[in-house]
Length: 328
Image (tube, rainbow, N blue to C red; front, side, top):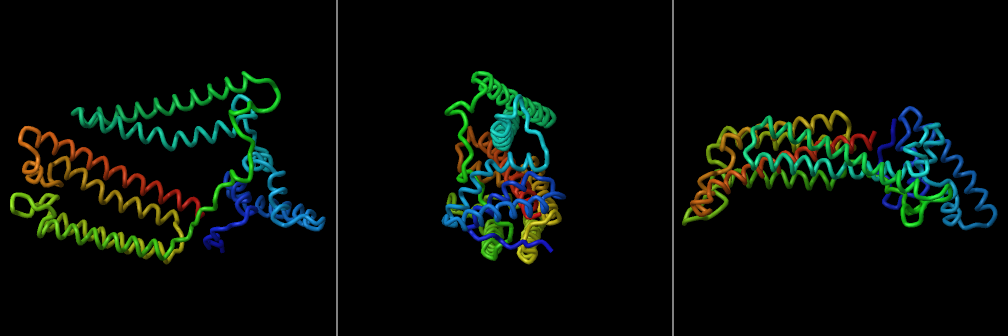
């Protein structure tokens, strides 16, 4: 049975180093490599301590001597590190992965939002978003590779150029991610869901904004009772999901899939209602915004709301699968 306990905040450098090495190793080999590496570190550490070196100093010296965890991992499983040459491969790969996590999603969001606000049909929005995002990915890969190619070719066969990359140190070790579902997280989630349900009911039965001497709802009053009842049911299921997650102690692939389904159950109807002008209360915006611009503001707000709902759901889905992968 795997130990899923959350490591303490002050996890030892050795444990952080072992995790940094094994994270890029196939799961079938991970346990053997971790055991071998812990034994190697323990042997070297014992030798230094027996010679009179303080334990913390000895640990830092042993790990520093072992070097960059990714390079050590590649050597332990005979995996080549090549881009144009092995010297900058890891630096290029780390930078590219970081850029791919940040730039393409932002580009896709911006392209889709711009096309939608411009009144493009759905097919054109999807096509432009996919094509633009792929173009961004290709450019990221090409230009980062070209930059590192120029850097490598602009220096001699000696060490890395000063100021381009820095040598690996223990300060570069990643922190160990907590994989255990915490009680505090469950409580916060349940409180948030309860407040959200209360606000939704209050909005439909009373109204959230006081305008022209009357309370007006932010969401379309026509959502009550069936659409709103369905949403309240989804919130109740989400609350049960948070309890199951805490009982399970960690994210799993099954929980990540269930989380995705819950997100889809909310996003798909919400987008459809927005497309039918049936989610937001149009009368509210026609009342608070001057007449010439009211419909335009309402249209822009509907688009922004749709993209906001989709972006939040997408991030929550991705985050669930990432947590499940880390806890595996």
